[in-house]
Length: 202
Image (cartoon, rainbow, N blue to C red):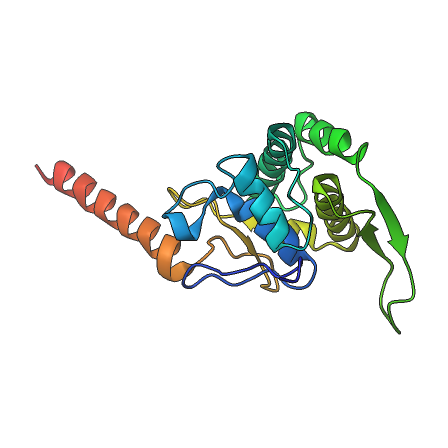
């Protein structure tokens, strides 16, 4: 599989474009579609299989590797959740500290000359667990630099949290899928208003 392929999406949800597909797949690993919602990285072996599927060598992935990946994943998810109401909000210091800690071990280099009009990009050195996290951080850094990072949002729908890319002109999209989470929330709000109205009428 191409590491930048966001993978299979739940019905009604759209994939992130280009290299951000890796970040989306990384962050959405908290929900394994095949297992009905279980964490896709349930143990070190499962994390290793995820790495293998993305083109990294996961054979030696340890519990410490998995724990570090989960810490980074959850920091990115918290940062993406803030993009709803305040796209330009600054991440909390604790989450930036997690990114910095992982970055200190991240074997990255810059690559130029991918083609006319193509900007420089980060590429990972090696192919193990550290290289996978390095590439995720490299793509995040690129997206922060060109303005796409604030378009990656975590859905606030109940029991969701799926990361989606907001491609709307004014960055106003709120749900991973209007047909799924948006309609569910609107339905709950409608029923709550009906209950309140009935109480006021009595």
